[in-house]
Length: 85
Image 1 (cartoon, rainbow, N blue to C red):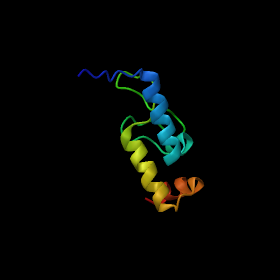
Image 2: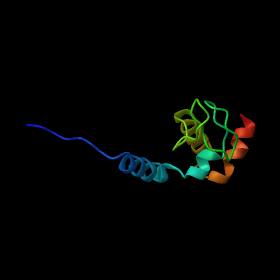
Image 3: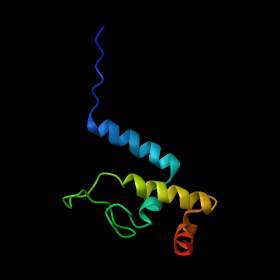
């Protein structure tokens, strides 16, 4: 039996973005600076060569998720929590 697991990169990105939207919005993730590439709040993450990434770095998403948890799921409180840490 032969299985073909090929997926277009567009379908993978769409799946990822739809899953991310359920967890938190892109605006929420971009509200904090990226600890990996040092992108500032509101800026997109970059690859090592300076090219833009399709989605934020994993560490940035994890920090945003942690701050959302601390703020009780209120995105507008994410910057308040960031200033307190």
